[in-house]
Image (cartoon, rainbow, N blue to C red; front, side):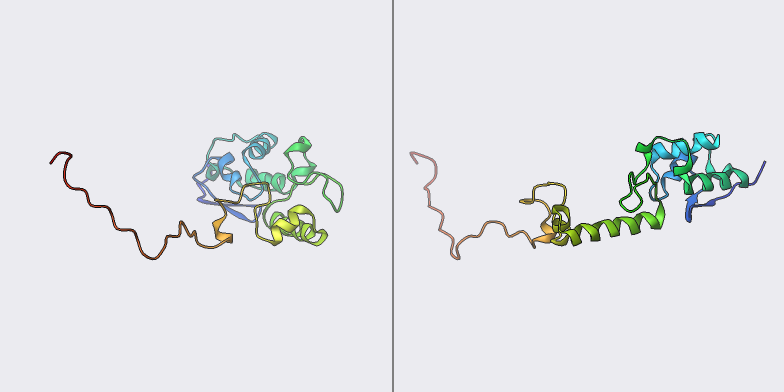
Length: 163
């Protein structure tokens, strides 16, 4: 049996060898549990064995599958970039490409001044949340109720009634 590897590198991401294959693949940015399960089934690797026990051939096969997931026979709803605006094809981007595409999408929304772009530029919530009590970081410190400078003196009561 091959020796146990404590650190596995797949798609430019270091993965913990003590985790199950599915859970370790989930640590790659852009890969969730359903996609990790699909990759394990395509590679014919048991998803709940430790990823550190896999051979180098299996690790290389997982790496190629994760990098080229759109070429696999998977349904298009599993991809995170369906009908990409530039190429109009279904894609799945991971790691740094995902961050780059997300930033470019936000810049495009700001440039065309759509509602979401305007909300992004004002640092406001984009997806319709209420802003009265949440998102205080954008508004400043909570003030509370203002009271006048001098407080009214409390009325004096003599002890219990009849006393």
